[in-house]
Length: 121
Image 1: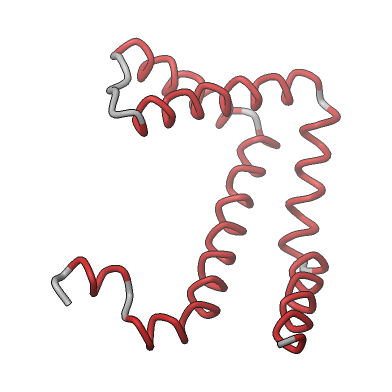
Image 2 (image 1 turned 120 degrees about the horizontal axis):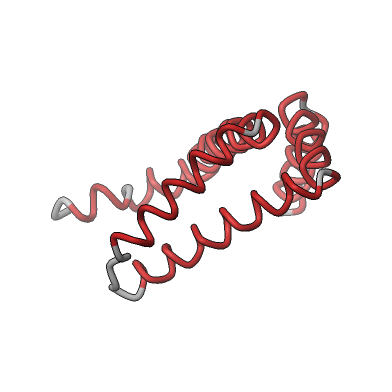
């Protein structure tokens, strides 16, 4: 089984050394070193987390909270570095989702995908 872990560590290393990850790391460092940008992004992510937690608890966000979230999103989108960071984060998330799909393919072949099971299989 160690071969599987070796391959996982190799994949981790490849990902860490990829141009996409290096770009993400550079953008993250730029935001972290800019006090205003960091505060803007932290506030946005904090509000985003609060709204997600409410939804997970079955509560609907108020109109005011939704408006506030939209305003903060528009504000962070106007900041060039934050906007680029969020774009690259999304790309990295997509890559990791695709890798996860490839990795879990043997289990899906064996048990079927969650979508198959929801469909009555």
